[in-house]
Amino acid sequence: MDNMDLNAPHSMGTTIIGVTYNGGVVLGADSRTSTGMYVANRASDKITQLTDNVYICRSGSAADSQIVSDYVRYFLHQHTIQLGQPATVKVAANLVRLLSYNNKNMLQTGIIVGGWDKYEGGKIYGVPLGGTIIEQPFAIGGSGSSYLYGFFDQAWKEGMTKEEAEQLVVKAVSLAIARDGASGGVVRTVIINSDGVTRNFYPGDTLPLWHEELEPQNSLLDILNAPAPEPMNI
Amino acid sequence: MTIMSPEASSQRTLYPYVTGTSVVAIKYKDGILMAADMGGSYGSTLRYKSVERMKAVGKHSVLGASGEISDFQEILRYLDELILHDNMWDDGNSLGPKEVHNYLTRLMYNRRNKFNPLWNSLVLGGVKNGQKYLGSVSMIGVHFEDNHVATGFGNHLARPILRDEWKEDLTFEEGVKLLEKCMRVLLYRDRSAVNKLQIAKLTEEGMTISQPYSLKTFWGYGAFQNPTVGAEGSW
Image 1 (tube, rainbow over the protein chains, first blue to last red):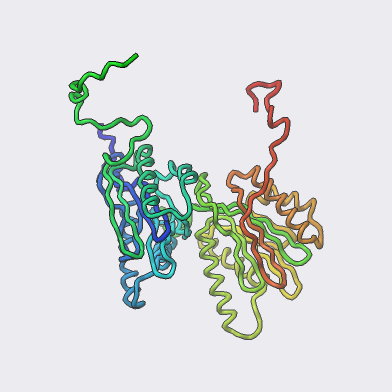
Image 2: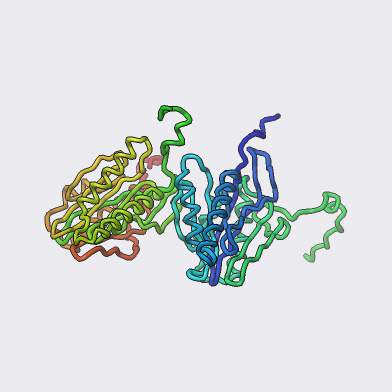
């Protein structure tokens, strides 16, 4: 019975997404953190702030991604003081890359860096396992992303509005949650642009239903006690 | 603490994550032509499709890489520093392809000796003072120089074609057609190939790299339409 490995390292199975739009970026993630088969945290926040204008989506080992984000936040803080102005997204992404690359044998974390700066506008950088850095118009990561390659190939368009971009991200995370056991919970999004940062929260009942999913009910009793359907006009 | 003990796994690279596939290059009349697709695979997933795997090095060389992309990015940083220091001498001299190839060989071999290789196969081509140079270095430091080189699957699929059809003083058009013939075969037969490639041209004047483009493929064989005629269940 006790085949749940409660001592397995905390891993964020995860679905993470970063998307650029006309004026900024939208970051999105699920909220499930698992320890083996047990869901250790069903409402985690995988979108972590580095500076006022740069956030990251974390996937893989929870511990590794947290420590990398802590170091980079610290370095960026120092850098901002010395620079005298907000750090650029590119610098933040390269700091993440340095840690990921130089410790590639020990770390198991895939990170998406997203933000807005006055020089380049909204930018998304992927830093997968191994420490490659790759600038992309959109990035997906985590175990749930396997189910989204086809979706994005079809649904991604250049020059979306903020609303279109956020809708796309919410839809995508929701689709991944439907099929990936390691992703679940709520969908969180963070929108970053020249006006600042907006955090949004989409609990399960606000998400669309997909194939073979049913409308949630309070109880079977509500279904049984529901009024009889109208007779058909044949 | 020996390099073989379990603790030592943190001291050696075990396996690559994001990888590029074949690079193929030939000497032609005016210099070097090099081709590589723009794929970055993540295991069996064709994850990134816009990775530039060929980059200019200084004024005279171009470097193409297959293998782990993060290690290629690091090699480019090492080369940036090398070229910077070379320029700082301000003595009118500049590192040619032969020198850069040698530097890369030392880099790869010394990392191999520490059981922590840069997981790449590199192709280094260039022209300096009219002399064309084309060499390759593997992740364990095996290096050589030839009229045509390739990495990975390219060794098995492209080089036989090049052995038959390469000749001295190919024109630009002939060279490009020859490389495209190789890249098409790789597209058919290499699972990690993607249909988006670039061709780099390097001459005395410098390097130009083409815009990304895709190759047409041919599937119109009768046998492809009806592969199992007379032998149902076979393929």
